[in-house]
Image (cartoon, rainbow, N blue to C red; front, top):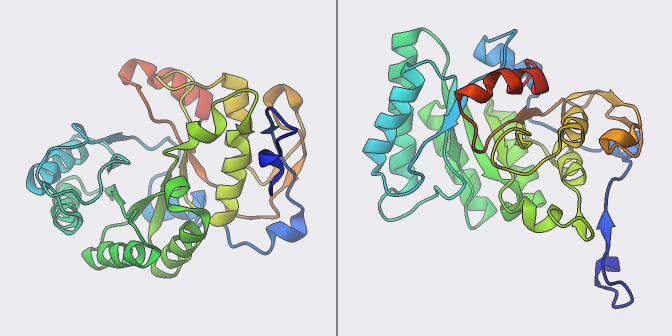
Length: 278
């Protein structure tokens, strides 16, 4: 968008959508693995994947945090995750958390016979530190890590995505800070543009809102950018906020993640809205 948002002649400006030419799409590797490869890795097909965020998000020791992860995975969840604020605080340093979470995953897998995972937040102050944490996760044998792509930045995200592709890690993307950019109706950048940019930069999952939970989001508009994340070819449909036909030329899809103020009674609606690949 260049400097146009800073022009003093403009009181407000909003980027609603953009079309990415297929020739330009081909210059990006996109998601490290994509939806189908992830299902192959997990050996789970024909249904949505079920997960939760560990609460309280802050204050637990690494050992107690690992215990909570184990109980959730043993109870039947496919995934658990770090909240975006969980990083490397004095009460729970990142390496300790990675270790106890890995132990919890192994124990739950051994007892259930299923492949389990936990989104370990690798977001850090520098790209080098993020790659160091990703390497640690790989050495511990966990299947997936997490990145806050808007706070970390697109360049760092692309580097992390390439590392995950090369080393067999899935990459979950959290959209923390997106509302600062996309919430205002008359100024900023719509989330569908941020979602398209993420598919180019790389991520196997992306938070997409819930429609039914605590976070704002209209149903048709949300489904519009969910299709932009998952499908290979999307026709223009202004009723869903899709202003341009988009051809992803076989770039792997990103799995939408419904997260934020949802509970068990929301599940029928979520499955109806998002389908199996979520």
